[in-house]
Image (cartoon, rainbow over all chains, first blue to last red):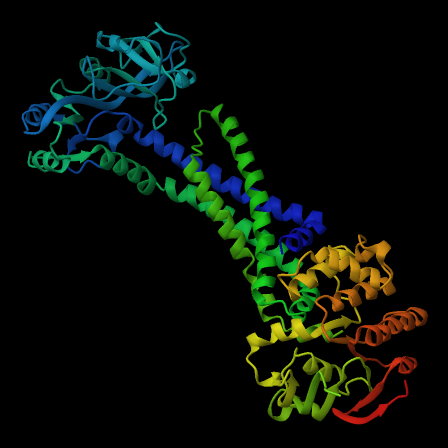
Length: 373
Length: 230
């Protein structure tokens, strides 16, 4: 069966190449689009995902992580005294204007942290000392944002919202969903950069005491007026869901991916069906000789799976090349093993579905037709 | 002599009501071991319907098809492929060979289909091809074979699984005279030397010399049956 399927498929190499190309394009579109989507979603929640906090406290009804309403700082103290809370840290996340060397400005997302933060802060530090963000004008920025900020190295000095800033640390790969570069600094400096009132913050990060269920602490924190508490996982999911559904980003990427699947379905389906029509006499002969339907259907499905396998390998390879090319444009294509596995299954299902018409054709094929001309 | 297949009072009507067409009416026929049986008749007389019912490719509207003591016409559809695999080999006017497969592979696939547990189908295929004079063409694709050679491959394929009855629908129609006679000679020798029954539909009266019996089909009925001297 395998030999028959393989030889039928490879007999017309041009058709096989077209079918494989159809699957490859489909796989490429699915992997790159979904990979880009996951890359953006990683950016959307990376500050949350890389934190060591168990819970996040924010303003009640605040849906967007990047644009949350300010909280009264007194809430931080209410959180600290809540039973079950081992530690809490304040965090500011708001926008400021970064003045470039030649005079232009770039919007930045200022992340204000405690002077010795434990629960949140920059990671993937490649140069400098993040501890120096405790200094009045110390900031940490990401290397991949050098182009936007027009800086080239550590110790460069700039202004943010009219206040001095000095690059004391560099990270690699910390990017925001909003495309405004993150600037990490201490709370007071962050307030200056963002013109926030001195008794205002955006988040309280909470570490739970060992052995105390998070649900219990969360319920206690929820009793504080005008705030809501979320586990880190919930906070991450809320943030991703907001950007994905409220902005149409998810729909955009997934629509393109679905179009890719449709392209693959049509191309492979058409090639397989044509191939089945070309060989209908031979399939009828097999049935006349006593071949059961499952054998003939198996030959068709195997052809579909061979197309799927070749298309997946080629399309997957092209996706990795695309990822490397997009890295240069500061775009993350997150090709996780799970995404690759899911796409492999999807490709197999797509090609299986594409074979459906052919399968129906051979199932309905009356072996008596072999005697008709 | 016991018959391998016996058709009793078989009728076949296509369609219903005013559009109904009677292709076969009250036809009875038996196929005996080792004989060459020619079916002759004008186009549209019901020959192809007759062999389709004989080979269990088509169900009759009425009548019985007795094989191994069972009326195969009354058996469920799913039982028929196994009986076809065991009992029949088919040869077609258009050869119906897979163009992507070599001669040997075309025969081997038939052996596998008929007997999935067959040991070394390729070896059996080579032996069958050698027996039809194609030992030196085993690895040729159909496109590189002549019409006569293709039909020999088809004959070798029909012999795969050693079915007792070979059914041919105009197997020589696409061949030149010399090749057609050679193919018929081969089929005749199969019947005599291997004890296979060969049932052939043909328009060609020159093939009668190879037949043990000639049956004329006209207007869906068996008009005459003549036993010929061996």
